[in-house]
Length: 271
Image 1: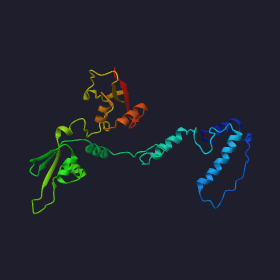
Image 2: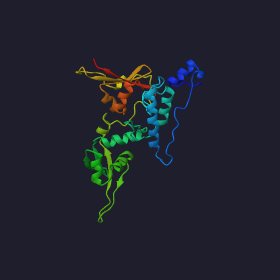
Image 3: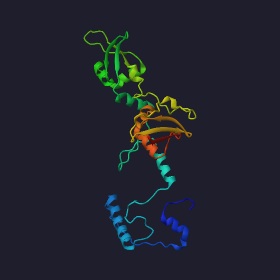
Image 4: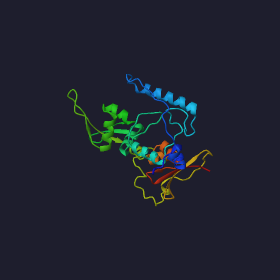
């Protein structure tokens, strides 16, 4: 026994030795071979096991219910192995737990692009403004394209050539996000923590003053190598700037986990 097992029996064997343990058969069971239902056979075994648990009440059983894993704790090595196996894989919702695959930066930006109400302008092929819309969806409906297609044309900067109808001239459109909106911090196209030089303090990039803040306000800090590299007025502001969801920032802060094995997140109550 070179591996450490998390069980009471294992600890008793180490303490008293195998020679002090006796094993025997309590009961032989004849299961119905014609019954192919595994669940029904398992229930028969569990019922018999429960009868012996109630009668003998063995001290080495950490759980007094047959077939239940309640009370059992996996060791750290097993937990880490489970974590590695599940990383990047998508599972259905089982017992309230959902494991989500890792999302690429491109996917995050695409989702943000569709979720925000942005000013979208449509220009003719000679760059004369035709119409302005409050969202990509509305612009897409106007030219009878999908929002995904309009997003691609915005990203590529290419001119879209429509389909001629009833002998009319083929329409050509050029889509563009209004610059004042695209540069706004509420729609961030970058991931500041990806290529940051951790030893360089960057507090001057963020407004660190907190006037007229209530006693319930919280400050959010990003720490790397014991240096505060970003400080925000709220978790929401941090989420918008860092392109990381509020839920993720909160979970990493509460569990003292490192983002990308490098950055620590701290939620501090403002004084």
